[in-house]
Length: 162
Image (cartoon, rainbow, N blue to C red; front, side, top):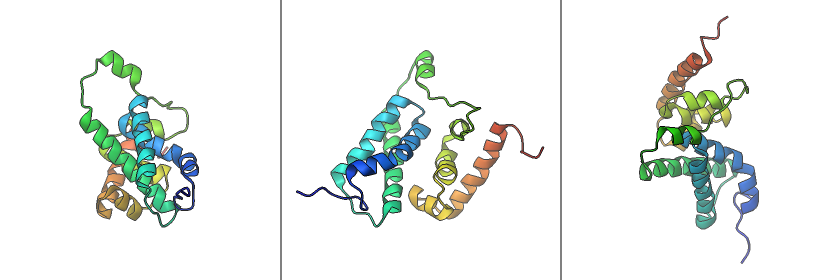
């Protein structure tokens, strides 16, 4: 049986190319390395098992992001449990505020804004594309971005007009 291609990429190439994207989505949503690894693996297992057909690499990337978001949502729903505070502090993912990376600030924003902000600033998706990936209206994405930017400004410490 010939190897299945995903938008012209072999499975291994797709995994290599989108590891950072899928991993970032999982870490942003779960804020825990171990849980993020589980969801990350499940996303790529679904790609392999379902072997969907994609129009192009952008379609593949959007599909992987959508599956990662859903996988994390399902993981949270199925694994709601109480964890002692000491253990939670050890497991929580942290990012350096001085790294110049937006990740640390995104981790401090409320969950409802993270996906839209991440897709817009880190993956460079347009509003219409974000709406399609998240399954919400464009105006909702604009609202999430607008409110999320205000929160990011407060996290960064001010309005940036110095």
